[in-house]
Image (cartoon, rainbow, N blue to C red; front, side, top):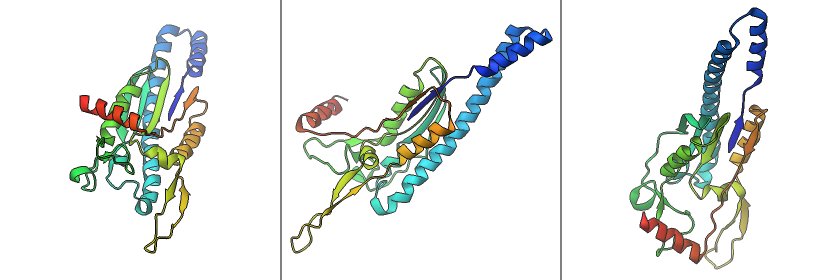
Length: 228
């Protein structure tokens, strides 16, 4: 989720005051802009820190029953950032990285998809590392205004967010136990809230990535992983 908006009106108001009082308008404009930027940076960082806590606790409220954060990889990848004109002001995570022994080889790493493990092509995904890469990439782009973003980088989160059909398997007597549709639109709810809170933001962006798999795509991912 990315929101971008710019600040203009406050400068115009102070420039009008400068003409009436005889102050140096250029100097005043510079001072006003510096103060306004610093104030807005602080305000947005505080807002982002509060919002990331809301997202994390919302996911945790579903975790115990559904095992969303079984390895710790999911919430390790929940991050936020604030940038101004392509410069990252501040960023962070929902929590310090949790290292559980329920993932691959007793770590917090999980495979590309928790429910799909092909022994031939299986390889781990480090949610924290993916989040750090995302912060560097997104926080360092954009030429105007502020950018506020929140993201979950563990690849399998997209399935939880958009919804999926969970098959319950078979009972001991061989009868099919049915299936049910599950969906947890945490980020969609947050998007609606943030869009309202930061109105009038100039741009809004929300994307849920759902990995798709085929023998060919898995082989390509594996080869890329092997090449480092």
